[in-house]
Length: 367
Image (tube, rainbow, N blue to C red):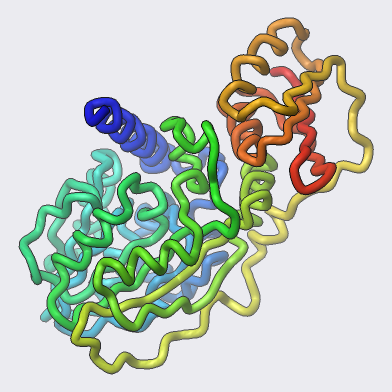
């Protein structure tokens, strides 16, 4: 059993690496989550700050909020950025700590680390140290950093309890945490959640907000404070992603916390932005008013989400390209699994119709 669990974790990490390798190497390609400069503006980054960074640091941005609203970094601090990506937050932290501080960038994706290395050099940031690794096992000694920052990363970590314990371990007493992450309002259950391929979807690994705060508390943090919430997935260009996020009340949060003894913290900055960027409008969900007539119907009511996937595969084989399959389901996890399977298989999700609190119909057009 231990070996199987380890293998699944390895597959989850590999799926995440593959996704963010693509974001590093091909940032202009469309993704199911907001990326780049538009994403930075949407989640609340000040435009003047972004203008001081190398464009290649911003183009592969894939964060979900603005953790610097926590206002916990001081001049001279040592800051650890978990999941640094191409370096947007690393380079902003460099400006915050000044010449007397240090920033450590931690990432597990080789392509992102290579891009981050180039961006650090382009910014002439001599006080940056880069490490390869992940949040479950941080390659730093105990009590070695003043601040830990992370943006859209911990929701992708399988063992969040271990990650928060590691963050607590590497912080000095009085150390601070600033995090932007994804949380959900409804529990993710069923066979779909155990499918490692779906962890790179951002929502699958997310935790209930109350459970997220409980994990921080159990790890030993004080002063846990949520600064705000943002309908992050409304900016997605993917109808499937917007449907999944809506089904589970997923949103991004920004929070801060302290390792005891808790110092007096300055007031945070307001977040989320009161006037969201135009990305929200471009990602607004389109409601289809004239649903197509399906060419076939798969009645999956009474089945678990895990048994729907082979049934959908078999039914799709009987259809011609362009024909429409209606899938009916009453497993709440199907609201996550069916759209995700459709996108991964290359079919188009035309519409999601929630008949009531449990039963849902999905209209899929065969590729």
